[in-house]
Length: 373
Image (tube, rainbow, N blue to C red; front, side, top):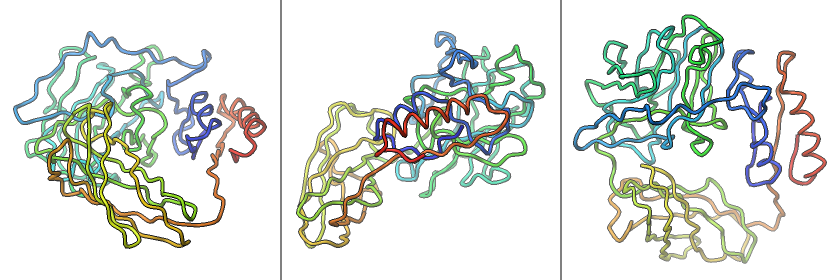
């Protein structure tokens, strides 16, 4: 079963996300994730964090990861073959930063070969950019430690973002050795991010897998942009005479749990300023912290461009080059309701799909106005 599109704001979508394993229809038919909620499926067991040996970083370097809480789940095709996996550094947060290395886990040391680390601006047939082979990997003291790849020349993150990944070959699948069937280490559910897990297996194309968990992988960076960059939703819909509800996403690099911002805006010939504070900010490097900004109401229907600039972060002038963002405010009399759309992709090999079909029927009955499926 593959839930292709879920608007997580609805109770129906939240229940589906919590209840069922999702695996891409483009993957091999024996592809499974051990992110299972049924006792009939293989359960993932967290690796003991006490075995993880921290590795030093050089002065001026910092670490980024989508999985700051460490290993929680494993993932794989339960077959011998070639794996390519990656995470993506968003240009909004990291343009201009330099990647000096990456770290990842290898969960098997008997049948894992051809290990390499790389960076790439695209995910094509062969990753581009500098590739480092297994001889350049710092060998860990145990199989549960980080494996570190250092690039001889730091790789700058372009404005369009950069993929950082690694490749490996499983030469033999042994059902009793978890690392040969599920060789990829993932974080927990809180690590889920659209840029956190890209996957390719022998004979299949690259696939983004955003609804499982992010790769348990670290990127070592220097020259991280100062201040904070921002983004706005692509489109905001509002009724005439109502103040637009607009979320400003702030990508801070200070690592502070208390984040205060000052901003300016212009819309429909009006300009103004605003402030906002989040005392429980996400301290992950480059993580998005969302603020609801205050804007004036617009009486007439139509489309209005909105420009927002982040001027100060924690009382300091914002020096980031991506401190401005634009979007469109659509003022309309139409009633628009967000609904979750659920599609089921099935096959004769899938033992979970009948339960998915039953769940979709149940959701359609329980939430008739909130779900299409």
